[in-house]
Amino acid sequence: QVQLVESGGGTVQAGGSLTLSCASSDHTVPGYIMGWFRQTPGKDREFVAQINWFTTDTRYTDSVKGRFTVSKDNAKNTVTLQMNSLKPEDTDTYYCASKRSTIEAYNNWGQGTQDTVSS
Image (cartoon, rainbow, N blue to C red; front, top):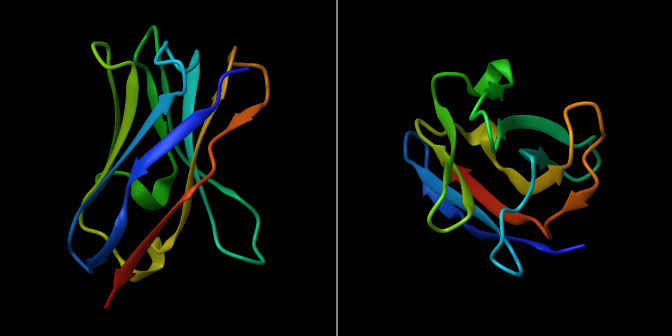
């Protein structure tokens, strides 16, 4: 299967913004359901947001609602996670993932990108 490649992220002060993008290695539509997850070392990976590529339905975890927006770019075949009003607790490694249907588990993962929010 194609690889997912994340880009963006970095270090920002609390209240700032970061943008993450996810693309497939062959530049095709990266997946039917595209998700963003985050993980702190020693903790379970946490669901953040997802988008259905074809219906554009979105879903968010409660802690990011109103601050994060997941969207897709049809021209570039990429998925973006716009993160605003960032908090120190948003510091994590963020992963892009895909699955082929709503009932499947996510089965294709990117390598992760580190985001740090300083207070």
